[in-house]
Length: 194
Image 1 (cartoon, rainbow, N blue to C red):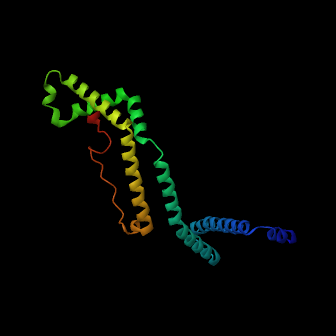
Image 2 (image 1 turned 30 degrees about the vertical axis):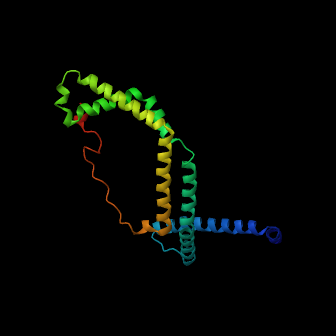
Image 3 (image 1 turned 60 degrees about the horizontal axis):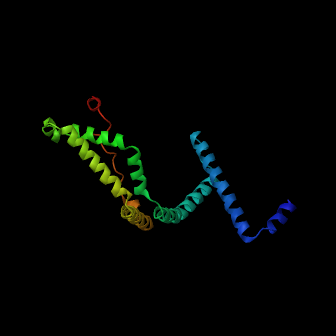
């Protein structure tokens, strides 16, 4: 035991703080697991563990917001270095034939196009329009100005999220019900497969 005391005296202030933090972390995690085990068995949580759990919850509430804001700052910095629209453009080029076929299928199934679909040369027109649209979209996504637009959009959204976290705006929002699945936004129906 004497050696332990000498070892503690040799620690710097920061090493001691880290050691205390580590011990508290181990106690908090151990207390959480033990509390869960006791509650599952129908037993009450001992007084000491309730105090440790309260301390753990207080510490989590204390550090949660600053850590979230620090992570969002890091994400904002990383987002500004990426070329996300170029990545989308590359994916469209890689899957060019499949995307063109998908667009043509969706246009053919559109209920507003049924009458036009009977015109001669309709498939050629759809093919050319799909090809042109895809080519223009790929060129737009490859343009550095589009990268700047998306980067600004993401950065502004992250700034808004950080402000909401700081102001605790998210704590007063009611829980939303999950959306209903309809044929327009849901999985394909057997009729779509035919």
